[in-house]
Amino acid sequence: MADVDATLRMAISSIEGAIGAALVDYNSGMALGTLDSASGLDLTVAAAGNTDVVRAKMRTMDMLGLKDGIEDILITLTSQYHLIRPITGRGGKGLFLYLALDKNRANLAMARHQLARVEADLEV
Image (cartoon, rainbow, N blue to C red; front, side, top):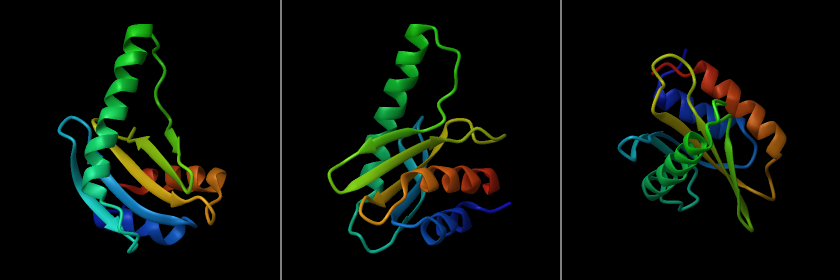
């Protein structure tokens, strides 16, 4: 099991094309930890903004009566992928992992798979 800092280091170092990672509390919008690979991405702003995305999706699922869980949310930009993965393990309720990827270097399928493994190793 890995703590927040080790988890974010693992995400950045093991996921090809990763340019930033954060662990975020979507109740407050606060980043509990961030790690940037010198991309210049403001992960604190990204954490707060993506909190709105998670809240909106959860609210929509509730209004639709969907009992399913969110595996991940993908935002595709011209040059980047942004992955949001709500934490499902014990103690992780209300948290999500956020990962920004360079679209030209990343393999999206592998990034999703590896982010799931990173989540499984996280101890909150």
